[in-house]
Length: 210
Image 1 (cartoon, helix red, strand yellow):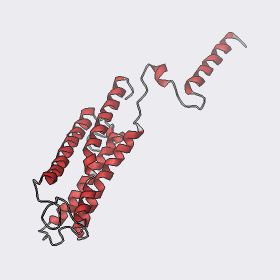
Image 2 (image 1 turned 90 degrees about the vertical axis):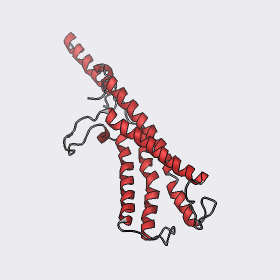
Image 3 (image 1 turned 180 degrees about the vertical axis):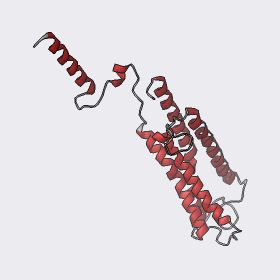
Image 4 (image 1 turned 30 degrees about the vertical axis):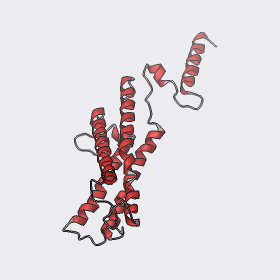
């Protein structure tokens, strides 16, 4: 074997070592001088999927209310398109909650090609983080106000007789149980927004995003 053959064989072995024993590329970042792309943590994926689940029970309760199955305010006189408004509120709320998946999915970083005007363009970090952060603050504030209003009697109590305590009766408790998961929605969204911001910034600074 000549010297040139040995050099070529050594280079081939080095390439195989870079790819790893199972064929996966393990040192791309080191050989190219780039920091490897930071993946989405598994816990963040779980949080993103938990947010729509936090919203789903209250939406189903509103559907039951419209259908007269909730057992709450059974004698309420629905006006005009009020039923459609309540149903639409459930659909919109769940749709907005599903947007949290964009904080852990590729379409939250690069716009899908079917989106007019964007078509595969990289989405700026602020365009995602700012709405998510504002949403987290607004949701947390609204839910906190609703809870404190019932606790301190700022609004009509949730019960079947109109008297204290603030919550009484099976139907009122069912309402509270289905709305209780909303308490976690704001904080979960805030945590997810921070994780998204840190990951995107780390990838940009390390040259991981192309």
